[in-house]
Image 1 (cartoon, protein in one colour):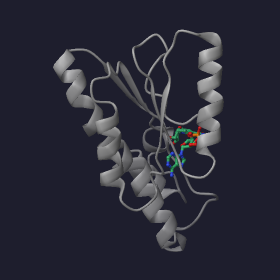
Image 2: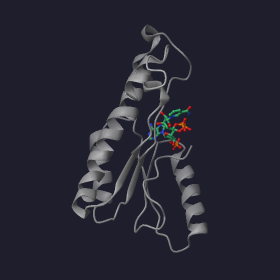
Image 3: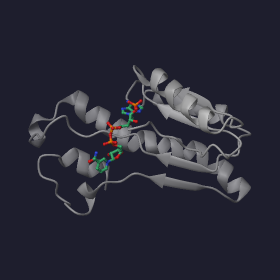
Image 4: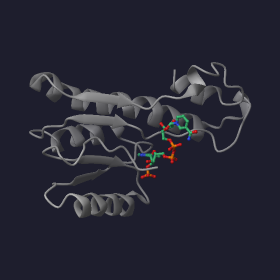
Length: 151
Ligand SMILES: NC(=O)c1ccc[n+]([C@@H]2O[C@H](COP(=O)([O-])OP(=O)(O)OC[C@H]3O[C@@H](n4cnc5c(N)ncnc54)[C@H](OP(=O)(O)O)[C@@H]3O)[C@@H](O)[C@H]2O)c1
């Protein structure tokens, strides 16, 4: 799945969030695809590993980088689940931390960084990708932390 892609190419600026390792390549590929289909589109990318330390400062930098851009749509899609089903007591520290950072803290901080501009312009839309884990299968056995982050 592509990383969060907040804007359609028709809008004035495009800002894409993605994760650390492989993302620069993925972002470059997606940017190339958009430019190929819409040669006049301006595409900007911003690489951000939501699971890494220092999330608040990094999202603040993202907020600075979009200042002045007419961000029309923010799609909070970046997210993760368990690599496999686990009892709650088997969820290790790293998995628990990454789930909460990525699915909750990152989404919250990015929205907080992007929303003021939308409010000022009196337009914009935010799409948060949820999960049936929090509605269709509320208890989502063996994936309890994931279900909680999608509540
Ligand atoms: N698959 C399902 O059955 C399902 C069902 C319901 C809801 N969802 C939700 O749909 C969304 C997308 O999930 P998916 O299944 O399509 O998963 P996916 O293919 O693994 O995509 C996950 C996305 O999150 C990004 N991401 C992962 N770790 C990140 C990090 N540390 N920092 C920044 N970005 C990171 C990835 O970026 P890169 O592309 O750069 O790796 C990728 O774009 C998630 O919010 C998930 O909870 C999925």
